[in-house]
Image 1 (cartoon, rainbow, N blue to C red):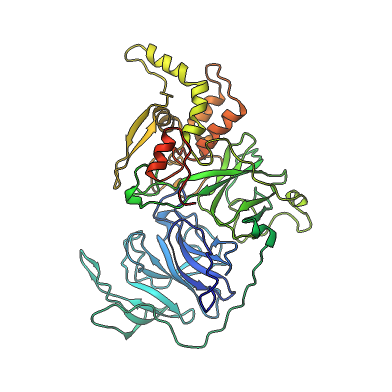
Image 2 (image 1 turned 135 degrees about the vertical axis):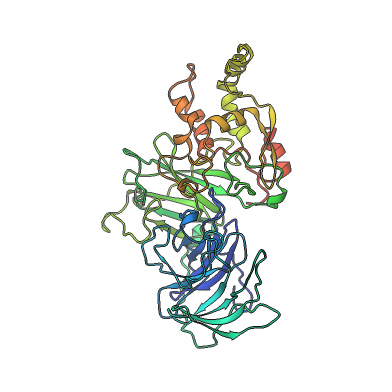
Length: 515
């Protein structure tokens, strides 16, 4: 936004909360994002950075940690004068924006734990994740040794913090000096009044033609560049691009869950999504394609069968006309590309690919339109006959018909959702809904994808069908539909709204009201 209020522009298209923007010494923006994409709800609340025009949003560090390893959240992150370091408040997921102060080194190797993080106030543990107190907050660094901050030393037993914060000067050696305290109200957000060097202005870099079409151009130089090993013999042939939809109704007022996918929290639902399409990956692992701007996206790397070998558990977005690029698929953040600079990736030797749309039922996403037709044509009649003819007490095959049945999830929301019988049979017994982690909330698989252990490649249904089943022959389109469903973590609905859900349940087409 300009200084007189004109030119208001959205810089982020993320679907959850974002807070506390600041400007770094190099002119980029810094803020805290809650990243709720297909993982535990109490992690990934940490600093991100982007250019002032919203290009290349990226986490500073630790985007794939799991909860016991560090603080639930880092917020009010600010650059330390005269240094590349940052200072932040290590705060809880449930609670206010206070806790312990930490120093973050964005140049340090990211181990998704405490590698880049140093405790500035070790007298206060991390609240909630380490049962520490919400003691410090809103720190403004003066240098790498001294900060101004809010501090409340008193914790009322059984009632948490009094939150009558005073303003203090705190140093890295454990000393604190009270500057001001009001007896009746909390004092927060101290800011020193002093001359500050102006950061450089980063120019906008957009392609006017692509911007007019609402598109960005995306390049990946080597999809095989990764922090985690790929399965032996892996060959990635395509990328599948998904769009995530922001929640359009209050989470406590939803009338249906999106599916049986284990939710981010016991009181949560999962994000509705749709397949925008797929693009080819060249033999050297490079990809070059156009993607829509202004919406939240995530990618899956596909093998020759179209199964996701790796799937993002985060998301990105592009501004109109952006030229976006990344090295690989979850590559080490500070690693240089392995390919010599003189070797032009194969994908960059041709025009960018256009997204090839997925099958009917993948956009908008709808199990009744994506998978149920395959079951009706290939499977349902035989299964129904086997169920009718089964002797008493004998096991029966799963129901694959489209009769509507209710399924209740125990939890804070206590949501009863209506699905088809086929969906419940397959998702519960043969699908992929818990990331291979069972219900172990401390498992690393709740927080990141390990290549080759996701979606169809990890689902009993895919393995069962690949072995051959009762002479059933599936077409290429049938396989694609089943694989996309399994790679979606077995979603059913593609909308949040009650009316749209009823339409989809009946086999009709309903689009999200907020995209």
